[in-house]
Every structure is written in C-alpha cells, then in structure tokens.
Amino acid sequence: MAPKIGVMVPEIGMRAEEIEWRCGDAPVPYDTAVEAMERRVAAIRDGQAPELVWLLEHPPLYTAGTSALPEDLLDPDRLPVYRSGRGGQYTYHGPGQRIAYVLLDLDRRGRDLRCHVWRLEEWIIWTLARFAVVGDGRDGRIGVWIAGRDGKDDKIAAIGVRVRHWVTYHGVALNLAPDLDHYRGIVPCGIAPESSGHGVTSLARLGITASMAEIDLALRATFDRVFGETAACAPAILADTIARRPSS
Image (cartoon, rainbow, N blue to C red):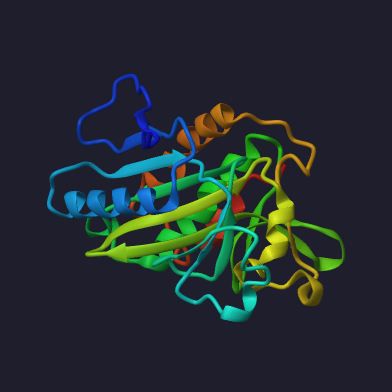
C-alpha cells in the first residue's frame, strides 16, 4: 500500500491565503514525492492551490542533482539512485533526516533564486538556534555548516532547489539522526572529505536529542522570520541580517 503523502498541520487562526503545511506520516518514496511536487507546482502556478511546505522523510537513497559527476557515486550498489531535476550534486536521504520541500511562488516573492536559496539557509540557521546549535552559511558552499577545528566544517543541512514557471520546489534536508555511514557511498555535494577536510554531521552526533515533532515545530516557528518579509534578502541587507543571526 502506498504511504499517505501528508496531512495538514493544524494552525490556529490560519487564513485561506496562508501557506499550507504538511507532515508526512511515513517515509515517502522519492519518485512519489517528485510527482506530487510537480502536480502541486502546476496547481500553484494556475492559482488552484496555495503555496506549500511539505515536511517528510524518504527511505534510504541517493539523489543526483543536475551537476552530479559520475565519479562521485562511489558505491552504486549500496542504495537506489535517483536522477533529480534539482540543482546540486549527489546527496543522501533517509530516515532520521527531515526533508522540507518548499513550494513558493516567486512571482509573489521576487524573482530571485539566489535570494530563495539564501532564505532556506537562514531558515535552518534560526531553526538550529532553537536547539542551541550554531549553524552558518559558507561562501562557495551551499548548505548549512557547523564550524569544526582548524577551519574544517561539517555540513548539517543540504539544499537543492528547482524552479518551474517561477514556482520553487525541492528544498532542504536537515540531519537529525540519519545513518551517516551511508554518506560513504557518495562524494556528498561534490565535497570530498579526504581532500577538503569537511564532513557531514547531525544533531545526534552533536549530542542533541530532538524528535521530528520538535524539529517541525521549530521549522514552523522560524519560517516567517525569514520568508515573511519579501524585502528581507541578501546581499542588500546582508550585514544587518548577519548581525541579527543567533550566535549561541
């Protein structure tokens, strides 16, 4: 039996024009999720459905973005591999990772894809701060990173997006407690740990115990801080925004 693809998160005082939020109640196959997103993108574009944030998990799998290199798939027999229309390279998805697919109409929010990616990073940074974790972005490296020793960083959230008719889809993958060993089957996001010194981490590896429900609440609580104001974007207000970022 196919899993349900989501249920609406109750929202007190929610207005019809607000974004719809869904939480998956079982791991969703990757191709099922992509098909559902593509249908929703068309409906948003046609004015037949509201924008959507869909929170879910996937079964263990690899996805190859539009910039993925064949040699970065180190163990092709380890897990199923899906070609993806999102930007970026190879990444891992699986249980213990919160996927946030963000379907927004950039015609209403400004046709700026760089701004959208930056907002996704900011969203995760503010979400992590609720668990006393300091995340940050890095020039030339999309995603959210945790500072390590000697200038080496560990990625805790990957970002890959696609836009069709100026409606965004795909989004963010935040590591709560996934099986990090599966990252050995790929060069994640094109950054080889052996040569760069950068790695992959999770809240669990950082000693933070958080449930999916707690993460979902934090994601919902911090969303409007970043996406609520159309004018809020880098680089125009970058200095001011960094000054307001959580630091501890």
